[in-house]
Amino acid sequence: MSTLASQVLMVRPSRFRANPQTLGSNHFQQPVPDAGAHHTLLAQQAFDGYVAALRAAGVQVQVFAQTRPDTPDALFPNNWFSTHADGTLVLYPMAAANRRLERRDDIVAWLQQQGVGRTLLDLSAHEQHGQYLEGTGAIVFDHAARRAWLCRSGRSQPALLQPLAARLGYRCEVFDAVDAAGRAIYHSNVMMAIGPDFAVVCLPAIADVGERQRVRSRLRRDGKTVISISQAQMASFCGNIIALRGGDGGTVIAMSSRAWAAFTPAQQATLAAHGRIVHAPLDIIEDLGGGGARCMVAEVFSPDAPAHCSAAGRAVAIAG
Image (tube, rainbow, N blue to C red; front, side):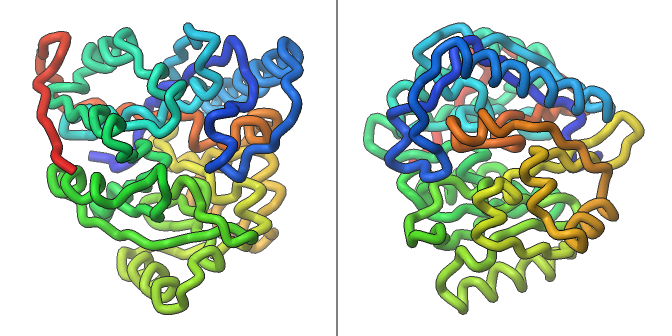
């Protein structure tokens, strides 16, 4: 079975603006004054263009509409849930109060209709104790090597990753990473992306030389061609890319047009050798939301033989 998802879930913004509750930790966000309907229209146009580009490559895209205007980051659904090929659905604890409102019963029900959710791992109660693990923003899953990568931050806490990874059958790799100003990088997926046979990682962000070498060596031992990006390239969302399965069965590597332009010609050639490149302009979403092409898609891994399950699934608690 492929380790890449051929289907993704996305949430189209109905009221888009910078989230004031995340500005303190997400330094990729720009504190741009709210322009109301203008910013929403630009975000919708960017969203629709990205959906069209993914569909043109044969990726199946299920679009939900944002239902609450008080959820400015709703278009980043990958942070509150993840799906897995064994039928597991994981719900995650979120740091910002308004991000907790993004969890939706209708989306969970739809996922379960796809056969996802035979086992429901609900970690959301940990947010009441100040513990956070924000989905595939916090965790970069290498499904081929069955490894879960995480850079520590207030929104990406290893104490919650370790029991989850053990439950899913993954090994943990934890490290520290900072931006050019020395601030902790809030989510692993803005500085690292892993495909079946390649990895993009901002190695200069890993300040400790020994830890940097460990990360590079581990990726290479796992059979990855390692593309190291600079801090400036990370700020252009070169680390926020995702490998998916296209309609022809080949690998699709999706990213923003800003990210594609920021890769060097040699890096572009290396990436193109590993899959079909799909990109779309997402500047307004990257600038105000502090997330990009990878953050906007939640992979839907449907099991080979879906089982009928109740609306609530089979809930399993994971202790932190």
